[in-house]
Image (cartoon, rainbow, N blue to C red; front, side):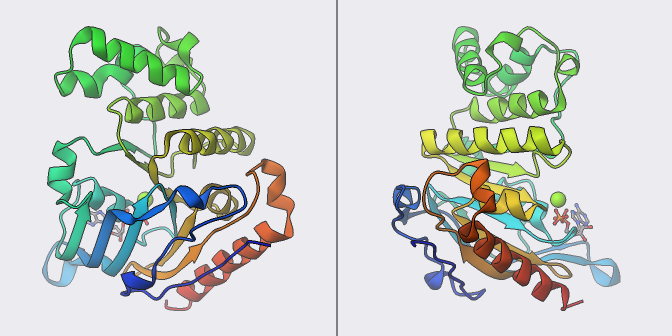
Length: 290
Ligand SMILES: Nc1ncnc2c1ncn2[C@@H]1O[C@H](COP(=O)(O)OP(=O)(O)O)[C@@H](O)[C@H]1O
Ligand SMILES: [Mg+2]
């Protein structure tokens, strides 16, 4: 059995190392020598004085190229804030945060990442295709190229036949697939996803989990994915970061080195249950801080 549930203490990035190999070569693609995201002592406080809210406190985390890291924790623990800080959408109060070795702002200017929001956030008056081309339009990419790139990404998420439809003509699951295509259109090496499947029914979510996993495997992208769902976290991840609320901090980092092919059926296996239990226990531990 190649399953390994490892833990690392917060504040010690040197011990947060991905597993190097598994039977299916999943974690083997992770290149620990190439850190994509490095946070050290990251603290983010909104407001000042008695009304100040510390959304993240002393968060240290290293995410290597090719990892798929899932952030899980109770509502309000700073998951969105962490993702937004990586995307240069939230300011850092103290500590350091580097994305591809540069500041989040420089990484944003390099179009280093794609971002998938909790809600699809598509413009209803634009076709699906023209929603997907929008970021390229804003980046000044020529029309023919942005159409070609958008079509390629829609094909990739199985929506080629829906390019001319409007977002409101698609199901919720299809809208989130279109959002993923839009995030991929700038050909990022890092995909940030904030509870993208949280509002979907379980059957649709299962199917999208399978598709996202296949997409990640085929592209070699680095993924950071926020969820409340333990099965989703275990199914998708190479590493699970468990956070606690008030103020948000990392309780535990769990290396998820499940062997074999990731199928929906594997969620019934003992191996899967071991990782899920480790996550559940860490979440419970975080709760006792309240
Ligand atoms: N722009 C903001 N201004 C003030 N407070 C904020 C802002 N964004 C987030 N917060 C606060 O920071 C905390 C963490 O929020 P968030 O990152 O959205 O948590 P999560 O995504 O884990 O539910 C919450 O208490 C929230 O109210
Ligand atoms: Mg959130």
